[in-house]
Length: 177
Image (cartoon, rainbow, N blue to C red; front, top):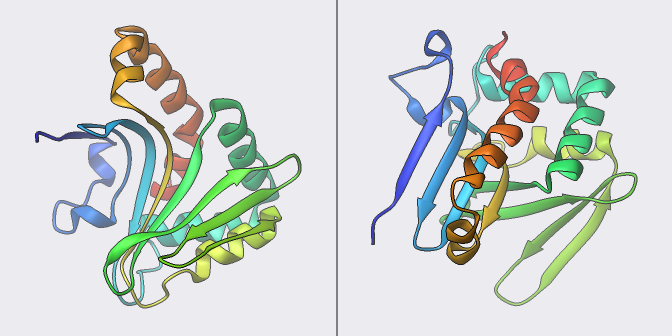
């Protein structure tokens, strides 16, 4: 099966040496459907202080305004936060959605499903401490089954552009722009 993924970013802030650590807006199409939004990666070990991951985590911990913006964008655009990390294998370690005042963290393991509510501060702390020594990726994304993506047709481009526009502050924070 074919898969396509496009990253949209500012050339000046793109590290060609370690691509998986970059921050980017992205669109992905695969047999599973379409996915689009924002992603930022953290390397295994300690992230550099000026890396996109570190800049975003510092800002989320310190800036209530950024946490509020994140909640608003996730809520109004129907996005979720997916966190992937290398544990036994590289996999989804948490899916976070919005609730009225905060967030709901969910994890589906082989034998059980776990969930817990989080405040904005708890979300920032969780993200800062997730997989401290392992590679990790954060996606603020919308996922769509293939049938829905095909049905949306050219209108999907407008929806993607609207989501990208809403996520630009998160991207800018990640790259220090």
